[in-house]
Length: 164
Image (tube, rainbow, N blue to C red; front, top):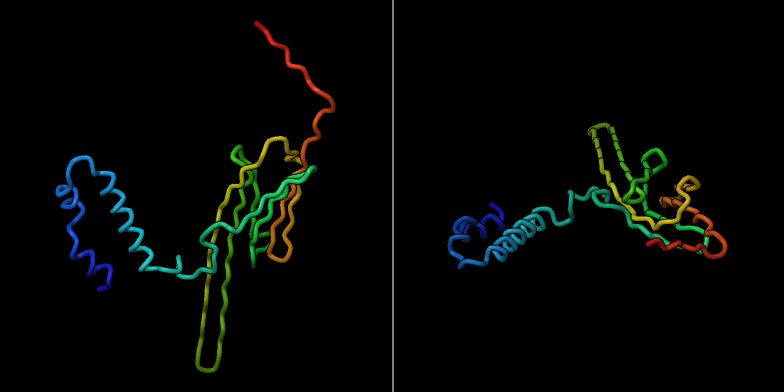
């Protein structure tokens, strides 16, 4: 029996906690239950997903804008071109990645096999005015770089007629 189980055994059950509270404190009870679940998850697996190498979450991203383009970079260590998928949606640039690693070792008196699997999906909102057809992407040294050229603005001003 773990420490969390011992502590929660001493606390009243959720339904009993709700009955014991004065009216109007349901939000506080719900917050407490969420906090209890979160703490239990932290104590049971403090490093998250049993140390799968960081693929359980989205990669570190950077979006920067120059005068001519918008550049999105994502750190994707260990992933190659075939491990990544890029697509565009109305929400923005969708980056999907999946890592599959299998390793076997055989020796005179032992056999070891290790498998790791992990995936992520991240959506990067993009500003308007980009030439999505002219976008380019490359992966080099564990960094994905996607470049979107900006659509050239029309020279001069454009008048908008007002109707009644």
